[in-house]
Image 1 (spheres, rainbow, N blue to C red):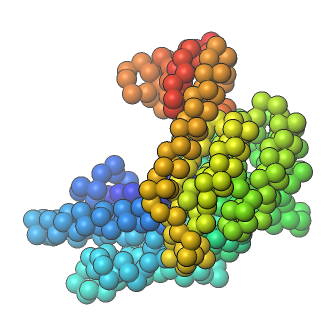
Image 2 (tube, helix red, strand yellow):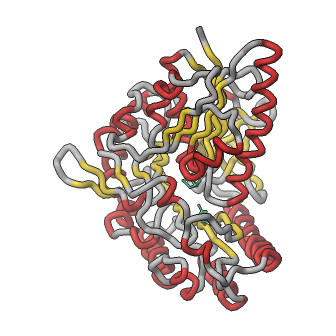
Image 3 (tube, rainbow, N blue to C red):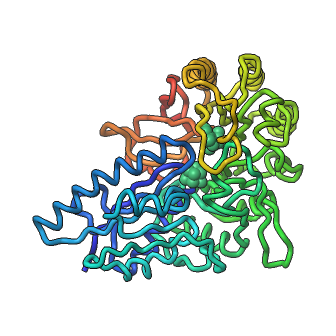
Amino acid sequence: MSKKLFIKTYGCQMNVYDSDRMTDVLAPLGYSTTTTADGADMVILNTCHIREKASEKVFSELGRLRMMKDRARDQEGRHVAIAVAGCVAQAEGEEITRRAPWVDIVVGPQTYHRLPELVSRIDPAARQRVIDTEFPEEVKFDQLPGEHAPRGPAAFLSVQEGCDKFCAFCVVPYTRGAEFSRPVAGILDEARRLVAGGTCELTLLGQNVNAYHGEAPDGCSWSLARLVRELAEINGLARIRYTTSHPLDMEEDLILAHRDVPSLMPYLHLPVQSGSDRILTAMNRRHTHDVYLRVLDRLRAVRPDIAFSGDFIVGFPGETDRDFAETLALVDKVGYASAYSFKYSPRPGTPAANSSEQVPEDVKADRLEALQQLLNAQQLAFNKASEGKVMDVLIERRGGRPGQVAGRSPYMQAVNLAAGEDLVGSIISCRVTEARQNSVVGAVA
Ligand code: 5AD
Ligand code: SF4
């Protein structure tokens, strides 16, 4: 009998990928996905622990799910299984079972391949939780089913997970564990299947993706650049992207791949976090602002049309007005196509959380506003500069209105245009007719 599965995904693209794989893992048990929690037989919250706000969302959502679960039991005699997966599950498994005892399963990012077994252990009568937040010996990717549902024209593909960099603000080394690169064969296999299923753009994912060094069939360890070159040979794979990278791992061969591989898109997300060398040191980033700028220069030299996005944290402990001014100065120098910026959020267990130099909330808020003003202006300027240009747009889905479709430019700009739905899944030439803050309007060229 078919059972309904609803997965709510928070956080990064890696979680989006993991949610898809959880769907694949549960398909043989008769679960198929639905778009709302109402009426679902199983609800999975795939959670994010990166900032406090992201974590707290989980507990408020669990409150709502409790009511839904009670209603299904009392009115229909039906058991709704509730699972918490992802990084909050990993970091706060015990806390979840304490604060939300109606949760049936707690499963970390490295053990969701065991979901079928965990589901079989649910016993609605016994008030026993099923918890699995191990970092197991077996490799998750080897255990995931080869078969997977088609993922649409643009899909994510995890190639690397975890991080050994230990930036002083970041929970990732604790929630995702040590850096691990998936072997090449499994990646190529998955990429070929996705392309056969209609995908034409792949974004290779990893928390520190450009540190990729996977075991290859030739017995060597391949870099990300080598992997990208191999993937570029797959017929029908028109676009390749990768995210997220660390400036120190932008090796020469990867920079040259941006010159040599036409399907590697001219857009790179390269977080810097701060423009102040003092703060970069305190963050344990192990690079200066100048090292970062030089990486961008090298990329621009080989691929002049490349555009950048970045991540920024304001109000890291000890950040002064002067440090913050250096961040603004760096942003001014770079000219980002888009960027993400956040107020520093102390995370339990990370070194910076214990600093006595925490920056007051109102100062963080003011700095965030000033930074976002500048970044928004840069994004609008970038979009404006696209006006009149002809670009390849991958049409990803129907648009908001009939007769409209939505896609992405090579620079990840959201493009809306008037065209038939039959174009979904194809790359078409478009002229940008109007720039907006977060998107552009195009016309078939
Ligand atoms: N507080 C605020 N932002 C953070 N990030 C990571 N950890 C924190 C934190 N503790 C941001 C960084 C990172 C992005 C994914 O989230 O900018 O690049
Ligand atoms: Fe959030 Fe980081 Fe986990 Fe992604 S890896 S879900 S960003 S905590």
